[in-house]
Length: 427
Ligand SMILES: [Zn+2]
Image (cartoon, rainbow, N blue to C red; front, top):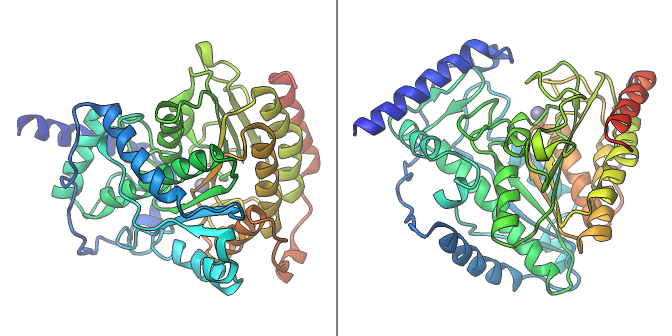
């Protein structure tokens, strides 16, 4: 009990420090703490002392069952983990996000019912076990957050990040969806099938650190998925492309000194979390395996395409990944209220088509996208639907007539950043 109290005290101290330092949209979180009646189920998992063996067995079984759904005509496998009870009044990372995407997919006929075996949904995906979380997160953090959710929620972890009683379990379910899709995609590739995977999961993950939540994120979903791909499936080289408009400081921190994970981020300059400088390239043996491309505000479709063609593609050709994981944020969309980028719906179609081509070229089609940010429901839903279309080999949806009013991009600033990134990384 004393240990548990210490963990809560330390987490609270960390949260207070983070709160004091946070500069991001604190007012967005001031809506008060309405209690949501989520069930607390944090201790309902059996944890094996034989950690990796347990993970391997659990996920091999899951992969076997999910693989049965996949046919040669399957182009995309997805799972939805909408975390409906993980919500806070007035907060942009809302429970409406995943339903908005699912509604848009249904409206466009991008459903298994409409498309048949080309699109497969994984259902009844289990939450990630503690063993999987500890591939990235500290024991103290995993134990501590379980206790904080159970005893303190609803509460603010920091000025940006809320906790309801269901939140820890929601985050674990989101990671579980990501891992299930890694399993499904890897196992399909071993049968010479090449579907991509997309986890429509909440909360987002790329700001979460090994020892701390941060910036709406509780668990570092992409990082856990990358380690899982390496340790459970024996894949050596993982490429993570993070196209959320914010730098994925948490993901980067997990792999800063690891040459086996190439982390590439395009993000808006001088925005939360104020990390991700061009000159941050990794440390020690990981030097060069962190690639940051901080784009100027107002960057749009041309900037995204240039970054893909001139940085992500050439780096993938040089790194030759065994799997590609994408942190798929939709807050660089021009409609987003938290950022100042100008990506269009079809920008996401282009990015996802390119990622699919890179995965086909280098790693037998192994590509898994994980939902990160995106806070305008219309922009989020349309961008995600165009991503689905691209991964299914279908054209983008009709363009949004409001896009005609977008301002010109800062072409000179974009070209300068891309040239600098290419020079730093020897491209
Ligand atoms: Zn973001």
